[in-house]
Length: 184
Image (cartoon, rainbow, N blue to C red; front, top):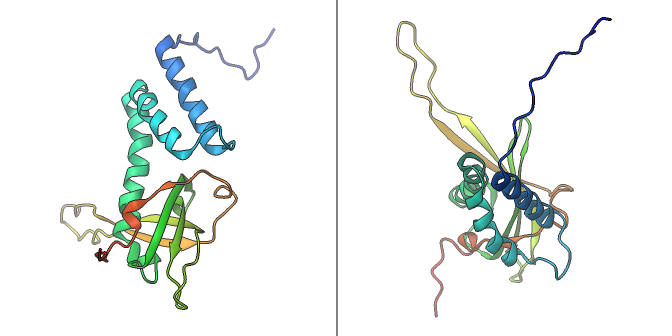
């Protein structure tokens, strides 16, 4: 009897019970965030549950998830002049899901309430902010060591896609009236 194209796999390694529980908790939080049920989990409750779950995960998984959103927040604020016509006139802002778009960059669901030319505010308008990492290193010259790789970012706004519809949004205070000092 021939084996055909099948190969013998080594026996699966057992997962530690603590890691299995942490992965299960992470998946449950992810499902709650992706499919919010009114009254079941508010964005504030999800954020409160996030820290203990990330602490139980292996460093590379928990840190990567937290770092990706924190880095996206910083880049959106830093490069706000690239994607907002008047970044100093944002009354309210929210941030939602982050995910990768192949060949385009990282996408982040954002909603902003900005001042209109008529003097009123727009209400929370959903947007998809796309962060594209660009290599700006100079070309390598003949017989020279390669130049240090340096990056810059291009941040653009686009209409929201299906992933942003109904996704939970967390407050994004860093983007509110960034360049304006409010008078009291």
